[in-house]
Length: 512
Image (cartoon, rainbow, N blue to C red):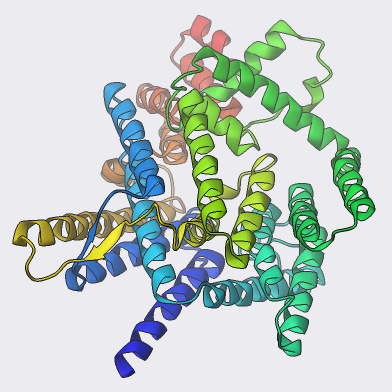
């Protein structure tokens, strides 16, 4: 009994730590205090925990789980494509490996404890985030962004809203509970989260909350007239939200128009991971060259994300990437239909909210979104007769088959942990040298290339330092490398300034 209690408590503790890291971890020691700090903490904790897990647990993964196979195929696709085009991004591949470890870890947690405890844990932390956001809105706690009154521990309201909309559907699991105080608590939590999303001003978040609410209502309400009214409201709501901030919405239409041009150039395999940040602005420039009198002219800006995860996937991984998403959706509905339950329905509602939010924002920029995605996937595929990804081997089985997968995953976890520690050290060092005077830090930038040489912002900062030090040739070379990962108006202006300083006026004019 004591062993069972311990095994029960440990997964809950892991959920607590993962939620704390991905929602609230914040450190000014990183260049991006709100985002990079969360990712670095997640990478270190997940890889360290995986090392311990595979060191002591004799578990072999039989790759018969279609979702796990899909994840591995996507990883190999990104790796092979990057290797073929000589643009291997070690940090990206390590991030994908961490997500794979996180997925396996959450699957194990979900198999050990009832999913309602996981839902309750996520609601608890989402409520803390909600209260923090509401205090920011009232001015009692400062916001991390001067332009937005409500951000939580994120860089803008998008991260705050994304965290709430994926957890909010979990509340529906408890609104029909037999105990009155649990029903009351669930309704109160749901209401507070919905209010916080509304106050954040995230139109994508408001629409996602509406979609989740309508889906739940359809499952509970049998009156056809009421269902029709809900459907009409759901159709009208996007039009109203468009009218609220028309210029912002039109700006996104421009981005989607140019993103489509980018995707059409390489529709099957896409331009490669990270290509949007490096190439999109060229397509936007071409659009305005073709349509100089476009009504979108006053809405153009530096763009690093299409505000649509599907367009991002289409641009970078083409129809192959979109096809993998389609397969994922098919698998999920197949799992649900074979073994439906209230928990699985709630998980699908959360996934639906995330799918809607992904049409208008960038939820997968934040690690908490990935964690909830994996929780939902693990919930939907649980207790299905067509999966069987883990078994505990008996003593009689072959020694090699018993230990090889465990050792492989242990070595992978160890490698990721080592890389994460070095990368974290490099990120902190970068933030430190960014405060110093120009010439003194140039040698320090050179030392960090091994770990941050594929980070577009790092390359931009280094090249700008070289320009200020009047090392125009070196600055030009670094900026040219920067355009492989990050390319916007500021990069082009610096390229032009370098060429001008070197007396190469034709090239300067082209970049200007």
